Length: 65
Picture 1 (cartoon, rainbow, N blue to C red):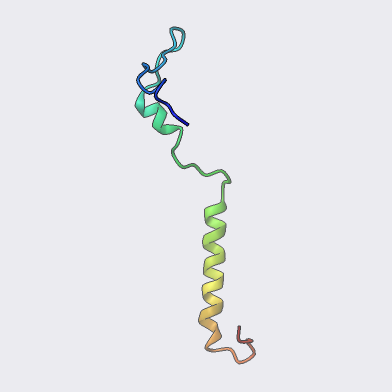
Picture 2: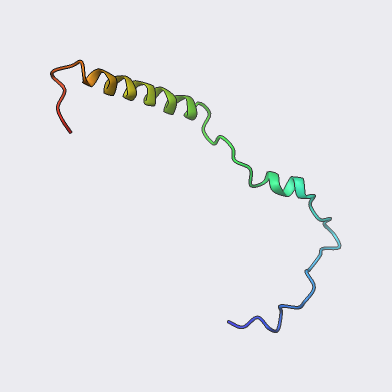
């Protein structure tokens, strides 16, 4: 593709809609928590898993992976 025909054209602006402020534009891409409580559930699962691995040295009936 060759963009020589459009590369130097001015950026289109709408006469009807004002430009969005940079701070509002940036907010569109900010991270958000899509599922409430997810981080806590992951932390709890990690804690339980860590406890299991800590107890592996003490337990004799744990299978080797």
